[in-house]
Image (cartoon, rainbow, N blue to C red):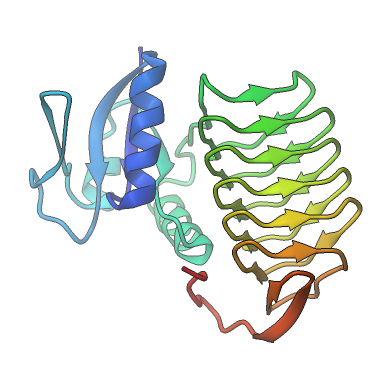
Length: 223
């Protein structure tokens, strides 16, 4: 069995954990969260306790032949953790986690560190970059491109030939029309319908989606 750790211990880390446990092909070593003490209890699940292993630097330097996935929801923060890990070990290997309950066409390309959650469907010709999140029950149609560190909330639907830029987030239940490009660092609010291209560093919301305001660096998603 492959050994794996999760960097982070919040909600996204717990989702990643549940997908890892269900696959039954990994030995899960624990969580790695700078905000928690070493050996602090993170999660009780089906009668077992799972703990924080310690700081990123100490865990990686111990060299235990494991891979990792970053369980941090906010795209900018996920990238920051990624960069911190590579400063410690530039050759550290990240694992892609694809739910056994997802339907993925064999032609789809998925980058390392990406999480595909249960119920998602990804169609022919699509490319999902590194360290992306495709959340519960998304439908990603043919020939999409999700660039590195982008993500889709639960039940997002995209038409064919959609492009999602780096660090961009598509909110819960949003629908993206075919042949739309959403540039980098942009947020699409929950339940929006996007029928026009969206420029970078902005927040869009509504049906049809309209520009709301400029997105500040590291600004959180709509709730």
